[in-house]
Every structure is written in structure tokens, then in C-alpha cells.
Image 1 (spheres, helix red, strand yellow):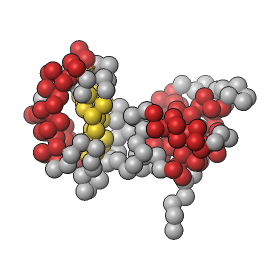
Image 2 (cartoon, protein in one colour):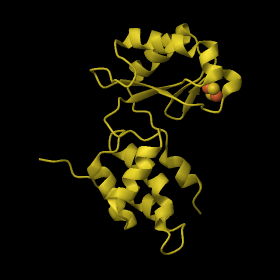
Image 3 (tube, helix red, strand yellow):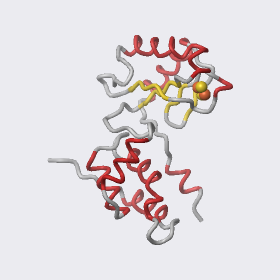
Length: 181
Ligand code: FES
């Protein structure tokens, strides 16, 4: 049976509150937060049916959602591990060892960049500047920035995430709730 893409009641209520921030006819402006909600709710990635569901909530065409989701690297268009490891590959991070860190993670997890470990725990990705160049090299995992990274610190980070086994997301519902009145 195919999976049904529908938000939980709590997430749907949150989505409706976000949509109401915008004037009538401008609901499309809520697209980015709704895509974050969808990625959080639907196992860390945006399948075509998940994006179609977001389009139906905003009363826009699915293609309008696909265009936006495929533009931003923070949206995953294929299944991702519970921990998406995003290593910054821009100049300052690269000069301070990001390349060695990527190679180290690839060896440690036995995957290549863009791949997911067979247990579904980790996906490795490289991304452009994460705006924390002063503490390069940087790795982002969900909402957490790991700064001044070294291969030793990567080992500790991986062990920690593996032992917790939780899904890490870029977007936490609690932040949206905190901004509501
Ligand atoms: S270059 Fe890596 S955070 Fe800016």
C-alpha cells in the first residue's frame, strides 16, 4: 500500500497558522516553511507525493513546489539518513582541512559523498559556505553547527549521533510555536 502523505493534526494546525501570516492570494509565500515542515514530518526528505501535498495545502501547482525544492540544497529530494552530515566545501573551510574531513568521513562510514549508510543513520553531503567561516572548518548536522572540526572531533561526533540514534532536522516546530502569539 502506498504511503499517505498528510500532516499530523498538530503539524497541520501549525502549517495553517504559517499560511495565515500572508495576505489572501499570497499563500505561496509560506512555501519554504511548509517544505521544512514536510521534510521534518516525512522522514527527512521530499518525495513527489510529499511536494504534491504541500502544493495542495497552498493551492498552487506542483511544479511551483518542485522548482523551489530543487533549488535549495537544504531540501533532500531523495531519502536521507537520520543524520545528514553537511560539510562546508567553500574556500576557508577547504583551506583549513575540509577535504581531509570529507575523506575521513567517507572512509569511516564506508560511503561516498552523496550516499547514505546501509543502516540509514548517516548521509554525507558537501555544501557551500555555512556562514561561520571564522570557526572553519564547519559541519552542520540538523540545527547544530560543529566548529573548528578535526578528524578526531568527527569521530566523537559520529559516535555521539550513532549512540543517540535520533533524526536531526534543520527545522524545529518549537521555533515556529515560539514566534506565534
Ligand atoms: S567557508 Fe565554510 S562556513 Fe564559510
